[in-house]
Amino acid sequence: MKKTVIKGTELSALSLGTVQLGMNYGINNTSGKPDEALAFRILDTARSRGVTALDTAGLYGDSEVIIGKWLKKIPESERPFVMTKGKHLDHSSLDALRSSVKEQVESSKKRLGLDTIPLFMLHSCDEYLDDEENVKKVFNELKESGDVRFCGVSAYAHHDYFRIAKSGFDAVQIPVNVFDRRQIDNGGIQSLVDSGMMVFARSVYLQGLVFRTPETLDPRMEFARGTLETFRSFCEKYGLTPAELAVAFVLSLPGIVSLTLGSERPEQVEQNADLVENAPRLTEEQLTELKEAFSNVERRVLDPSMWFNA
Image (cartoon, rainbow, N blue to C red; front, side, top):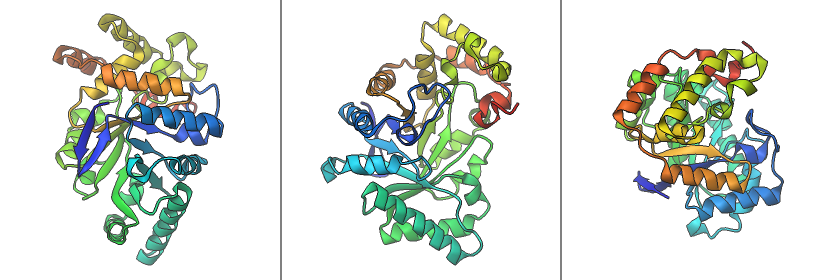
């Protein structure tokens, strides 16, 4: 597994997304949340394939609890880089914010069985953008106290990446996929890379939408048919599967440290590891074709929260 050393930390090109370990998630999830034994097999498989980073959150059901139990089996020197997130903070005052963040950090530490959280992020970028000074102050205190090693924020494509790049945060997690060009074309992603932040890409498969065929779309998502038909035509033209094209596209963007991909089964971990290790780099001609094809995709296709409300 390819790895990148950034901020003194070695991170694998694939990070295991673990929301599936704690709750039912994704439009293609047909097996539901795995039991503990299966969850451990998923984590073991990721470790055996050289995955050194796990992505979780306090809101991901009992994902942190599962990971914490699994970490007890792993020698401390060999444990992966765990990133987790907090949300719904109290911004009524600096002291209230400090208390609510500390409470969530302590809860995550307890569930994960860690003395120090490698990376703690805000789950909602809005909570940072609406209260920048106080959030940065509290997060810096967490680093100084040793409760967390790095701090960061999880953002969406509609956020101001240029402001985030100036935040001083160590890391950022953003949606990156072949359909969404907003923060690619405006230079937003490049600004994050240039700031020296760890840039983690999520939603590479757009919650499984890339695997849907036009014929199997939920009738409420008929608006995505044209986008999927175009995507499938490029898969055929380039001789790539939907997963290969989705991963190859993100890996062809400079500065992305790691792709966060979830798995419901150990076999999916193996498949994702193979994809990340073997996906081709797209040519400039192919990248230009994809840019022209997906420059004006409707927001409701790009935003899963709008899929069944359109």
